[in-house]
Image (cartoon, rainbow, N blue to C red; front, side, top):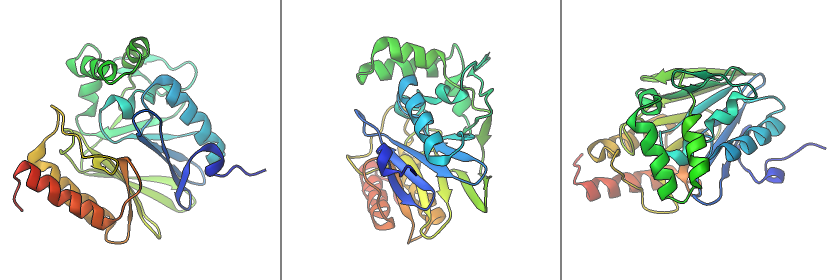
Length: 259
């Protein structure tokens, strides 16, 4: 029997494209399926959550996840990433290597946040514990953070086979200093926005946010997807271009940014 997205608790967004709203922090994980490869967008908030996403993605795609795009360096989106290295993942200078073949992508500068011994890794662990993640799980995930093998500057196209191509775009800074968007062309096109867009609450601006550039990052998302795209936020329900535009205007007013 063929497994559907809904069977595993996922939401089908478009043909071969789905997302899951994860528990506790209502964080989005996405999956884009091609004929020869599969792209996971974000990895959950713990190694256990990442392992569950990896297993479900394999069942939905019919093959393993070959690419992992991290939209921004916050614990609830990246702490499951090491699970995609697979059994026997070896430790490299920046964390777990994807020796199983999973290629990891992030916006330019993400790798420095994950660097072993750096302040960024400790800040992620501390934030995770403050937000309610078990301290032991947070430490394990921080210790195992993956090395970002591919830092995206500008745009990067991935070919997943069967005519399916996906565009990764460094659209930040905004929510953080390192925000990556994922465009899946099609009818409709789908844009994974990370936490540049949030539907289930007001967008969160932490100490690593760059408010002066955040509205421009949303303009870039709208340029990528266009008026008819579906926009998948980092938290909350799928939205349309009008929602993104309204959130862009609200952020500009909130932070005193003029056009």
